[in-house]
Length: 529
Image (cartoon, rainbow, N blue to C red; front, top):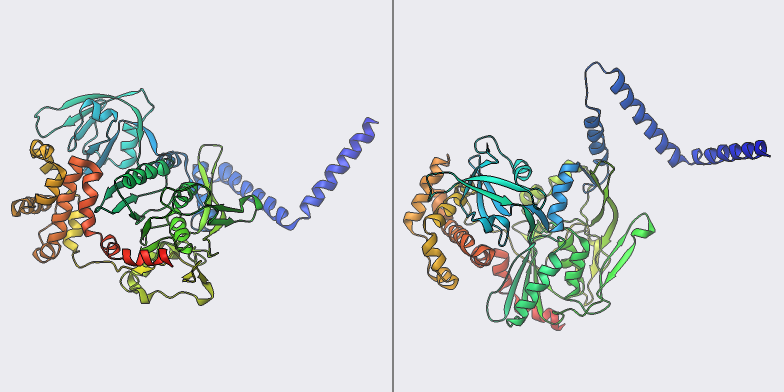
């Protein structure tokens, strides 16, 4: 009997293997795995030089994924940890916003309530040493800063600070702690009726942050809202869906998704009583608004719930699932496409390969799309109708209801050099440090209304820029003078009042927002259709 059972089992295994191998797709898959294993084994054993096979495998994975869509990516362990920190909304470290200027770590601002603020770090401080080791002038970069300053809660790090008001190096021992990261950058009343909320990405805490701002502004009398999603690259899909739900009535379709496997097929509908289902809404988007931003904009546009203002969005309509691999690295695999309520896919084409896909923004600029709406051509076969019969198009981003051209009238190569050399930021930090006592005593309303950028301040900026190898360009300066003054004023305000002081001033240069303020009559007509 054991012999018969053994023979039967062997026959079963053989038949099963034969059946599997007869499946063409499975046979090809297994053959490919074996071939790759053979190649890497021969390289490891017989290649003439020493090689790092782990590196070869990682390169092979990256190249393999390039044959798929542009958003399926492999992320090595260390980068995956940093990437996930951005989305989770908190990390453990010393709690500073920093910038690297002239190969030195500058404290832009200590995060409110964080460990650095508690021990007395200040905006404008230069971090010269970490645990006794010099970190200035060594070619420091962002990843090196993360390695040095982030760490488990409860651990200590000693930083040596150079402060303008002190000749000696100041040493601070900081106990690392959990540091919250905000994703709703600003929320304030523009006037007695219009509120403004800026969402920079859809992270773990975004919905809670958004609800806090929305509730506060509504309590302050907000009847109309501008939701700013410009430059928002997306993030967690469910947070975007939850925000859209606050504007839509029960059971209204927000977004659907469909993939190869049925488990990835789903419809997401409004199900909660939103706190702003009846207020007038305008959503701001631009070429940097992607993924979750497009879900929100598409849901509100297709349901005729909001007026969309700005420029055509990025065009990312693919959903990725993060898969943690055995070594802690991560595969973000595209598992479905999503569709707006009218049924349109807004994913732009990617059949020409990754390099062509990445050049899309440059081609849009060169083609004139950023300046003229009529330069954008849609395929008539991809036209859809909103609930109230307005035409909308699939095939490549969300086209706004009202187009706002990119305003380059105040820009110049000189301004761009000031910006990218960090001269503007370094000057404003220096000015704040030198005038801290006076600025800290000011009321924000007084600062915003009466503070003027003087000619002396501009001349000081020019001299600082020249020391940073940005030669003065009078024509460029004259063209960008008003923009430069606004940037200086906004950056100084950020040093004193954080983002609450920065955004009301910098938004004076936001052409999409300024145009949106003139369109609430149109938004109200849409709501009344």
